[in-house]
Length: 300
Image (cartoon, rainbow, N blue to C red; front, side, top):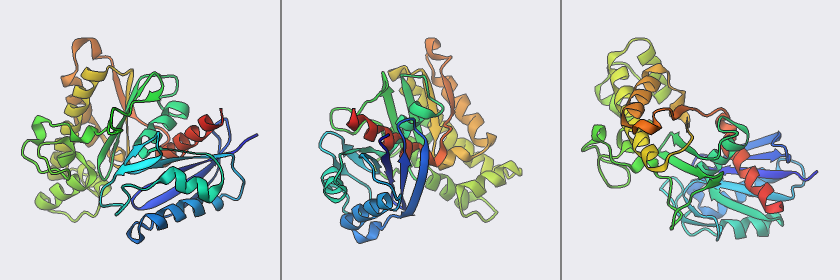
């Protein structure tokens, strides 16, 4: 039985999992991503994470932060969370270091593949997944395969302009995008500007909202509605069977989920009003398992 490794490379941590052909996650190793030390250090950390799994693997799959050209195995562009990451020949570098075939894609695409293989989207062929955390990323599976677009940029769900984000500056340099008010940092910053209680994370803002803090509820509602508007518009364009929402912000309570679902439903065309929006089920393992799926496809 051939074992493979799935790697999830993010701006703060790198996780590797040892996975069998049935999708059983047999072992997992996580270590900090040495982003400040440059691309060579990040690649070396990924190699170390695989070796720490303690078993030989037949292939490796990678889900990496940034825009990824999956055909070339190259990082096309990346945010400042991974300085110098753009241009990294990730597949080449990992194949040279590990001596096995490597398949590379974006981390949110890997997340979607994991959920479609073993999680909340299992059995569905047309799926939209959105990960809400530091940013808002997305992935569209069409007939079970990732839609990358002409330039490998497809999936930037957070950069859809929506009315409830009008005028808000976005990290991309634009204004009025869903990410400008709906990402984790945007939600926290909005509460800290207006709220009266201390909060160090979105989860703490969510706890305050659950406890009745009116400003926390208002902030979560604004961000959720912006995201719901964006997702409704994307669904009108793409017609998926199912919409999944993952990422750290999806752990917020009903004060976030209820306005998200209401705004989403309000945007849908009549034939699409039965499209379900629900949370993913694999949590932090989704991208590792999706990356392992990429590795298994290399072996076929």
